[in-house]
Length: 411
Figure 1 (cartoon, helix red, strand yellow):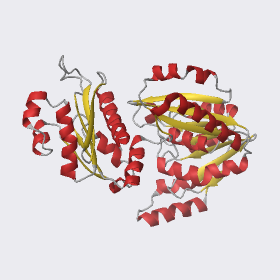
Figure 2: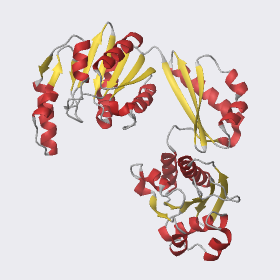
Figure 3: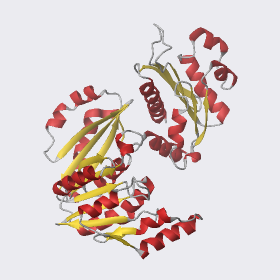
Figure 4: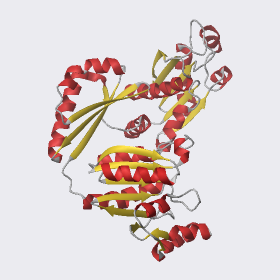
């Protein structure tokens, strides 16, 4: 059940829009036991699209396409698929009724361009899109499947979850079970961790793969097992995970492939705690990460972005004498920021950051990349100084990740 994902759009090639679709699809398909072997992005040119469809249909049993099926002139995927599959367009009353119901539900008025969405190829199975006006089309040739979906992420996700994956699972017999296990590892650089795990990695069976997924402040280790039975895959994952725990002792923080902001949210919810942030160099990045998770109001009180010293003193209560004597990027200041956030925001725990993100502002004593981070819980506070480097965006994200890790460890 090899799969190729094709995303279509000039906006993806020039970086105007980030391709999140193929990343989500890859994770979802892997969880369902499908093997994604290729990912292709192609622009809004007919011949390029035809070449991509042809290459994909020769090397994968399943080809999943997103993008280019809207009502405007640059949306040519549907027309190109008609050419590829030698198909003609016809007006589908069922698709039109579905579009009408969506417009009626949302109180919008239809126009001729919207009506054109009901034109579909006659050599495909049409799958109604309950999340939008562009229908999903399912083509088959020589035992292979090509499915075209909208590029709008929430529409694609609805179709994948409710229609496409269930149909694919019904059509194809599962003769390979894929199981992934992700562990979050702290306290190692990528190279140091690779050296530590050299013997472990060399001893892995051929059907087990180990991947290193570094990100600022942490490394995700992913074990992947490919087995003919689901029970075998589960057993092998369990055995290898136990070996990792023995080798890395207390360095494995969690065993879930979730973003840090979700992990800290689950911990806070389980302990019935409220959290806040006091941010200087991260400028609200941590608060943004936390509140990107639905339901975060259950455990997040708020944030004080204390970018200047006056806010650190007047709002968070940081000592003016400490600001003058030690500077904003210092242990006393960042610890007072964390405790001040708990007091001001009325929460149970908080993190604080104060640093020199760059590219300017560094000194010989405190070069760019110097960041003090603190985490506080009730009356306990821990802090540490880090030297992250010279790249501003990397410094901000590493500081945010490290702050959340520090609080997770403290809790």
